[in-house]
Image 1: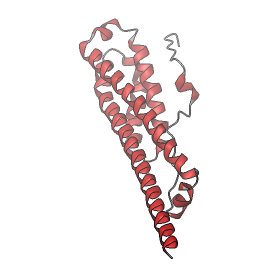
Image 2: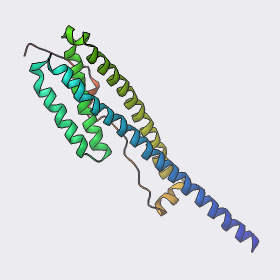
Image 3: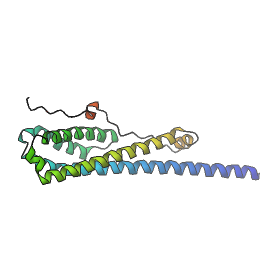
Image 4: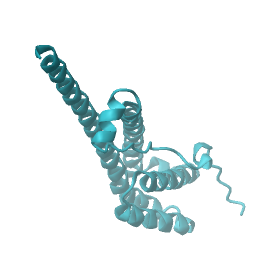
Length: 183
């Protein structure tokens, strides 16, 4: 009789420990996502200032500025990880274009406001990169817990769902930007 009670107690403690580990991992993923969200929002908040600084120098780049405005609106309306990752990739591509084009404007490069905004944007990009890595590490750890024994049993019992990684879907984003004014 005592042995059965001890076995049941050990099983209950094990279930509680595994459940708490899953909840902790899930909360870590949620926190990691919120860090990405904060950094991406920070980048979107910096962009209008950068655009205003650049507009006077690059009057023929209006389609780039329109695209940024549309991306900001889409970002505000987006919800899921995949959707935000897609918008992030598009914005990164557009920002690369602005930075590459700015190389052709020495007065713009010398502009203190542009330099400060560019530096802040670079710092934010580094933070976004780190946040993505931390998020993906957290998601991988959480998803692994959902798959390995015995936590997979507890995860199914309590309906834990796997999470999406923050991935670059467009391979073009990884390439250097090419600017040609001869078009």
